[in-house]
Length: 227
Image (cartoon, rainbow, N blue to C red):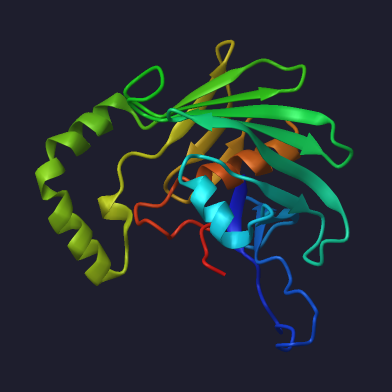
């Protein structure tokens, strides 16, 4: 089970010291209540235009980030880059430390791709394509039925400090050849890897990119900070 978390901070570097701040987010592997081992530290990789250019591009579906072996960026584990992002369909490649292809991720936005639900397609290099649809038809039907109440639900969620009630269905189960190698579980924002030997770099990158589209509140995703 993989989870995207904010990295713990003992001490930030002094302002003006020239020392870059450690990577702020990590993907951790673990099943129980105790913290498990870190799979990778993840941060967005900014284009030449900096933060403003990244945030402008991400509005159209573009994403770019790095998975590091440690919080001080000493070793690059993998990189996610955008191949194309237009018309509600975005294609990403996950590359290894030497630029080799690890896998491809395609996101097709609901009503803009091939169906009424957001479709995520993951293809490991040399492996079978796995397709996952966001939410179940039954729960989407219930959610849309109560759509007129969503404004009230959002207000109550904000007052209560919990946005879960305002979210639409979020669970995704990826299927390939009658099997389910991956599952994003909305209850604890975790990615379950059911397939033996599945590349953890691809799984970690998938979780990270899914979570950039995950928030019910605009501007609250982990990669959308203004600084």
